[in-house]
Every structure is written in C-alpha cells, then in structure tokens.
Amino acid sequence: MSKIIGIDLGTTNSLATVWENGKTVLIPNSFNEFLTPSVVSVDEKGNFYVGKTAKERLITHPDSTASVFKRSMGTSSGFVLGGNRYLAEELSAMVLKRLKQDAENYLGEPVEEAVISVPAYFNNLARNATKRAGQLAGLKVERIVNEPSAAALACYDMHTDTTMLVFDFGGGTLDVSLVECFDNVVEIIAVSGDNRLGGSDFDDVLMGHFIRQMKLNYYGLTEEQRAMIRKAAELCKRELTNQETVIIHVNDTDIQGSVSISRRELIQLSADLFRRMEIPIRQVLKDSGMGLDEIDEVILVGGSCKMPIVQKYLCHILRRNDIQVRNPDYMIAEGLGVYVGIKERNEDIKDMVLTDICPFSLGVGVVNREDVSAGDKMSVMIPRNTSLPVSHVGEYVTVRDNQEHLVVKIYQGEAQLVKHNLLLGELDLLVPKLPAGMAKVDVRFSYDINGVLQVKAKIQNTGEEKEIVIVNDKSGLTQDQIEEKLEVFKKLEMQNAEEEENNYLMNWGLRLMEQCTGQMRQDIEQRMDYFAHVVGEGIPNNITQAKRHLKRYFRHVDQYLETHNIFATPDFDFASWYQSENEQEEESQEQKETSGEYDEGDAEQEYQEWLKSMGL
Ligand code: ADP
Ligand code: MG
Image (cartoon, rainbow, N blue to C red; front, side):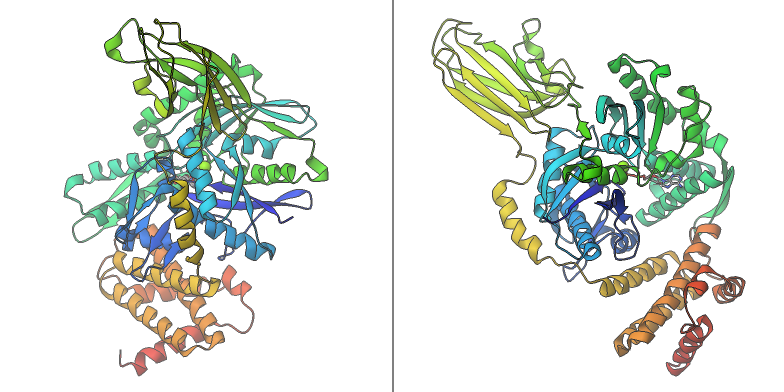
C-alpha cells in the first residue's frame, strides 16, 4: 500500500507530512523548505506557479496571481488569473498537487491518498470543496480532520489525561477548541472561532497607523504603494515579535518619513482585535460547561501566536503565569502525521482514537407561526458540538389542507430564522392530499465522521422514501466538471526543481526591480541579464555558481529594503553598500556551506567582466 500523506492546507502556507519510523516527518519542498506559500500564479504562456515563485509574482503580476483563496472555499466566488476564472477549490487543488509532487520526490514513490485538515469552523460546503480539491489534485481524500484536533494530537502524551485549549491564530482566522484526551481517545468537546480575525488584521492596523502618521490619503495611493505599505506593515509586525519598538522609514519620491511603533502602542491600536479574541474562548467554556481551572494545557497554533502581545494577553485572560510555546507553524502538520500513523494502523499508535464533533447546528426550516412574514424558523436536528457520527430522526407534518408538496429544506447555522443560516439542500416530497397535519414525514439526519450529511425522508402514510446526500453542492464544481478538469489538471505538470528555482529567481528579481529605482534597479536588471546569459550557455557548474551569487545579491537587496526603506531612494549607492555588507559577511553561513569550489569574489569578478564585455 502506498503511503498516506497529511496536508495542512493553510490560508497563508501549506505543509505536508508522513508518519515514518514511529514519528511525524515534515516533507521538504523543492526549495528544501517545509512551508509552501498558498499562492498560485499563471504566466503569459499559461504555465502555473505554486508557492514561493507565485508569492514573488503577487506584487509584480497581481492580475495573474491569487492568494488567501482558502477563505472562499465552498463559495462560488471566483479568482481571475490571466483572463480565466478559477474557484478556490481549483486553486487549492494546484497547491495540493504541488505538495503531492514534493512528497513523491521525497518518498520516491507515488502518493495516492491524503488526509487534509480544515478549520473546525469550515461549513459543509467548504469541507466538500476541500475534498473536491483533493480529487482534482489526484488524491483520494477519505478523511478531513479539524485543525485543532490535529494540533491536540500533536501534543497528546498518551499516558496522562489532559484537557487542552487549542488557540489557533493564523493569517485570517481564529479557531478555539476544547479537547479532552483520556485513555488514548482525543475528543473535541467544543469549538468556536472567528472566520474574519487573523494576523492580517494587525497588518491593517499597522498600515493605518503609518498612513495616519504620515498624513497620507489612503485613496490617493496607488495599488502598488498600498501593497508595499502592507508588506512593510507585516514586516514591522514580525519585528515587533523580537523587539519592543520598531521604526519604519519610508522614502519614496512621493512618500517620505519615519514612523515608530511600540508593542504597547500596537496593543492600544488593536484593542478591538483583542476583545474579539476573547469571545470564542468564552464561548467554548460556556458550551462545555467548564471553568478556566479545568484547562490543563493551552496549545498555541498558527503564526499569529508568535506575537508576544498575543501570548501575554492570553496569559492574562486565561489567568496563567506562562504558556508554553512549541512551534506554532508545524503543530497541525505534526498532528496530521500522527493521524496518518493511526490510519495506516501503525503498531505504535494504532489504539489511539480521534473523535470529532459537528461544529455547527444542522436542522430543517419549519413554518414560523409567531411571525410568518419573518420567514421559516430553524428546527434543530443535530445541535452543534454533538459527537460524530450521529443520526437523528424528527417528524414533520403538512400545514395546509390538501397540501401536495412538502419541501424539506436543510440548513446549517445557529440563527433562529433560517434566512440567516446556510441552505445546504432540499428534498421535495409528494405527499397524499389530506387535512393539515395528517400527512407525516420522518426526516433522518445522519452525519458521519467525514462531515458528510445524509438526509432521508420517509412519508409515513405511504412508506415512500427519498434521500439526499449533501456532498456535492451548487457552489462548487459538479462531478462532470471535475471529470473534465481532471484531464486538464493531469496535463498541468509542475516544473522540475531546476526550472522552478530559475523561475523563482527571475520573479524575485522582477519584484525587486519594481521596488527599486535608479542605479539600483539598473544593477538588478543587469545581474538578471547576466544570469540569463549564464543559463543560456548551459554549463551546469557555472549556472549553480551564478545562481548562488544572484541569490545572495537579491537577499541583500531585500534586507536593505526591509531595514531601510520600503521604496529605495534613487540616489542610493547600492553598489558600495553591497560591497561593504559583503565584506562584513565573510564568515556567513552560506560561505561555510559552500565548499572550496565556490568563491563569492570570483563570481562577482566574472559578472564584472561580463559587464565590461557588454560595454556596460
Ligand atoms: P494560516 O493558518 O492562516 O495559513 P499561519 O498560521 O501560517 O496562517 O499564520 C500566518 C500569520 O502569522 C500571518 O498573518 C503572519 O504575518 C503571522 N506571522 C508569522 N510569523 C510571525 C511572527 N514571527 N510574528 C508575528 N506574526 C507572524
Ligand atoms: Mg492555520
């Protein structure tokens, strides 16, 4: 049997794992990194890029690059890339395909099956869209695991009974869950969250701060300027993770100034975000009937949990002196690896069981006798937080004399009125003409461990049955469309590692060119030309050397942009700056890595000679 992989399909980054030799192993991508940015881009020739290369193209080719599409899973909103429209599930499929390919390279064998994690708050439509994405990527996806369950699994020490609060704070979402672990069983007790709260909200706050401090008019800024400021804001946020105060200098022809911000100020500016962080915590405690003192462990997941101000705030509201921080980036993937181990029935963990719950209420619409004009009311069949699998029957009757049709509309959500909940599907039943209340229907909801809802209706008077399985829904691709797209996806081969890296470098350079002006921009361009020239010559050793050289140079430019400016000044003497930086870095990691065959000085000299030969 081929190996199963676990995939943490994140809004910002994605990551794959396997279970090997009794532990979770993270799978590196072609850049030898674990995190692959969840970004997809397409070029003029119709080539697709996924991950790091695509992320570079976000700034240079915003019209043909998509990110943050996870938020749109299970909706019909599309992303236009290079003139074609794609659903979030198709873009996710490309990310999955990339991870599948990286896993195959790593394992040296084909991979056919994956377990994918989703936020606990993902509704049915989004879960099904995730499954279809797997199918499109050529992966069998039997099991969708809630992200917090996976995180708990990563931390569970099988010998102690523990109650955990999992706080997953990512780029765009917050998920809070209470998980109980006892006798090898990991059980979710309650989940809550905020689909619209994440690290990017802090970026927005910081961006707003810069704009106000510099007395700029947001609407007067170009798209590009906004993207730059947003990028600088995110960097500033990350720096605040290491420092108390950060100063950002902006030096563009139109925008000039320095703005400082401290952690304390960020807390004040984000008061509203902190208040919102507290709500789901209260909710899970309320739903589970537990007190703060019953929580044994707090598990921090997601990049935004790295922020010290978030950690401090959590200590404060959870009344703890300190919360242990493991690696928030890998937590879910680590747990998924464990889950894969369980699924493959590995000897060491096969007795472990992961139970799950239904994260939202499911029910049918019924006539609202109190206020007909407000529309139907929700009759809950399966309340949220019910353990899965679950099956429940309810009886419904006609409301009018001689009523011929009884329409069972299936909803998901917590609102009293169905119009505020999500319509999942409907069953139109032909019932015998009888006085009101005499035609009766039994409706059975069965919700399985994979989040697939089956609704069966049986007309009591005639014994006739009708059922609906809510797997494929209107928002996403139909099975026919999937078959069709599968053909397209099969042909959509990803580039090999070599091409991928060259492309990444070119796109990195294009982005830097857009960010710089004057001499610096010209220098970047010439170095890229030189690189293209070396690649054209096709001598492998030279290409490797030129690649290293260019990477190092780009890294310096980026470093410069990050620490000094968002927009490089036209008259800055980058060449001398680069040289002095280079000298300081003599003992750098990179030089240690490279054996005698590579010398930074030689590479620079060859470039300079080429410049001369070109008359530049
Ligand atoms: P998702 O699960 O949504 O894909 P992640 O868990 O990867 O997201 O978290 C991404 C978020 O974490 C981003 O908003 C990013 O800015 C933030 N982040 C990552 N590293 C840091 C850091 N060192 N300090 C502060 N925020 C960080
Ligand atoms: Mg996440």
